[in-house]
Length: 140
Image (cartoon, rainbow, N blue to C red; front, side, top):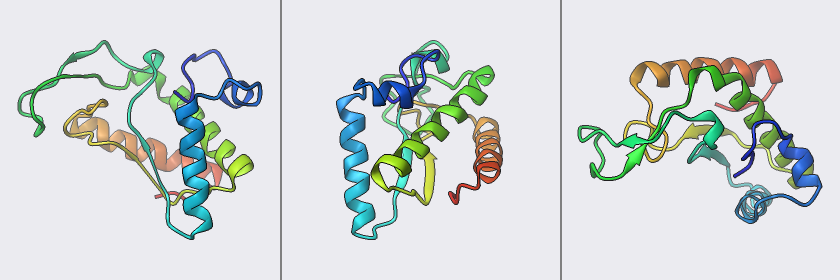
């Protein structure tokens, strides 16, 4: 919900009053936690339509309940996804005083909603680690 359209700058949309209510509430919760000196973990729960593969049934051997659907991140969208994550982190810092310490994709082995193979997960760690390091972002 942070960046529903790939061709739109999410921070500019937020500045123009088009910040999704749930995203604003997440920023406000992050600010509350930061003020209480509670470490913050930023988690991607789902991907925008522009960054994901078509929806597929969740694999029965994924470790989850086996029902429902899932998708993968489209490999050619990694750079755009990294930029979107960076824009989110910048907005959180500049407008809410939030500096998260950790980052994750939620339950990648089960596929709620982003499923990753072991190879994709390894690639995600390398790519995002390099991205965060290049930005000077102290996230693990």
